[in-house]
Every structure is written in structure tokens, then in C-alpha cells.
Image 1 (cartoon, rainbow, N blue to C red):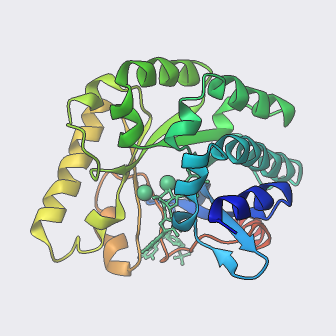
Image 2 (image 1 turned 180 degrees about the horizontal axis):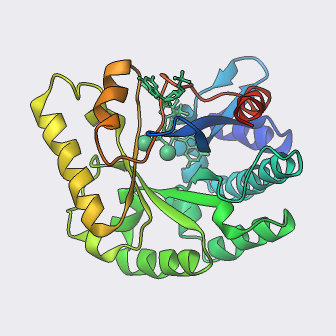
Length: 256
Ligand code: G
Ligand code: G
Ligand code: G
Ligand code: MN
Ligand code: NA
């Protein structure tokens, strides 16, 4: 069996599931939303992490089908949590989008359909794109993002600062959120360069009107650094790793 064949079976037999990592308000400590991350429950190997199979989903084209399912699954959960009274209108799920998924001409329509099927406002979804998407076809990216945002869907730049692109695209790409990559956060309290980079991102974001999410907050020291800044939200093991839906639901219950 090649990995690709195994993934075809995984799609057919629905071996994928979602986990959720809370995004927390830096100032109030409240859950504001969550990032959705995919997992593969392999019948023999157990849980397979995404870096082992996302690239194969991408190269084989299977990402179209899995991406279609994933956005619907995310919307299905929001609908359930709204009906349970655990989810307010301003909360969202943040979904990672890979390049071949984004460049499908039917992508925007597909996302809007998923929202409609679950009777959700477009503000319930945030899409995480990467610099890799932007550089592949900048003009096309801008058009698609403008369309998504005109409907109220929020757009976040994931892993910000790790890609190839220059800062100049920030002026042109329609965005709502920058996610500071965890590689800049890890040593924030000891590495003066990382600290300077993060401070530059924060001050630039203020002028560009972008929200900032800090990723990879693992320690109290990390948290204390961001508490003293304009950073609005954080994600990281300090608050919670990505968790399965039952556990995430418990966290939402504690909040209410
Ligand atoms: O104080 P309490 O444990 O209720 O804080 C709940 C949330 O408030 C935390 O999960 C965090 O998001 C935020 N918070 C406020 N102050 C601190 C702090 O000093 N450390 C951490 N880890 N979180 C804090
Ligand atoms: O969840 P974890 O830290 O193992 O994720 C590792 C990588 O896999 C991250 O870069 C993350 O963006 C990516 N990833 C996780 N879930 C998804 C998904 O649903 N779609 C895409 N395109 N990437 C994902
Ligand atoms: O690349 P992306 O940001 O989409 O992926 C986020 C990944 O980072 C998730 O797969 C998650 O497992 C991982 N992650 C989340 N919080 C932490 C953290 O505090 N520390 C580390 N090392 N990884 C984290
Ligand atoms: Mn992400
Ligand atoms: Na990231």
C-alpha cells in the first residue's frame, strides 16, 4: 500500500477527525474561538499527525475532497454548539486552507455553501492562509480574499514571518489577522532579535488595523510578555493543546 492509496481508503472510510485548539483573549482570558486541526485515525498506526499526510493530500488532489468535508464538519460543530447555547455569534472557528484547496475555482462558493447548509453567519469562519498561497499568484489571491471578506469571512495569515514574501504585500493583501509564528515566541524572553521582530509585527499591525494572534504560548513567561502588548489573542499549550470535540465542549461549558 502506498500512502496515497491508504489516504483514499481513509477518505472513503471517514478516518479523519477534527481537534480544536482554543484561541484565548490575552486580556480577559476567555475562549474567543478555536483553530481546527485535522487528525487521521489510522486502523493500525493510530493517530497520524498532519505533516505526514497533508503534503500527500495536496499532491494527489485528495485535498479537494478532504477540504470540502473539513469545512462542512467545522460548520456542523458550530451549529451544534450554537444550538447548545455554548457558542455566541462573535465566536469563530479558524480553518487552515492549503494552496490547492484555495486555488480551486469553486473554493469560495464551496465555503459559502457550507455556511448556508449549517445556517451560519459568514463571521463564524476564519480562514488561515499562508505566504505560500500569496506568492503563487498574488493577483488571484487578492481577488479571492476580497470576495471572501466581502461576505464577512475573516482571513488570517498563518505562520507569519516564516515565508518568503516581503512586508510590502501586507499593504496589498486583504487580511484581518496575523498569526505570529511560534518560532518567534519560543525564546521571546531571552532572544532580543525574536523580541524585536514580534514588537515590530505588533506595532505594524496596529497601524494596518490587523488583529494579532500569538501562537505557541507554552509558559507563564510567554504569556506575561504578550499581556503587556496590543496582541489580542493567543493559542498554546499553556492554555490547552488541540483537543477532541468532547473536551472542547467541556471547556466551552466552563466558560458559560
Ligand atoms: O486567573 P485565572 O486562572 O482564572 O485565569 C484564566 C485565564 O486568564 C487564563 O487561562 C489566561 O488566559 C488569563 N490570564 C490572566 N492572567 C494570567 C496569568 O498571569 N497567567 C496565565 N497563564 N493566564 C492568565
Ligand atoms: O496539528 P499540528 O500541529 O500537528 O499541525 C501541523 C501542521 O499541519 C500545521 O502546519 C497545520 O497548519 C497543518 N494542518 C493541520 N490541520 C490542517 C488542515 O485541516 N488543513 C491544512 N491544510 N493543514 C492543516
Ligand atoms: O501551522 P499551524 O499554526 O496551523 O499549526 C499549529 C500547530 O502548532 C498545531 O498543530 C499544534 O499542535 C501546534 N501547537 C499549538 N500550540 C503549541 C504550543 O504551545 N507549542 C508547540 N510547540 N506547538 C503548538
Ligand atoms: Mn494554522
Ligand atoms: Na502557525
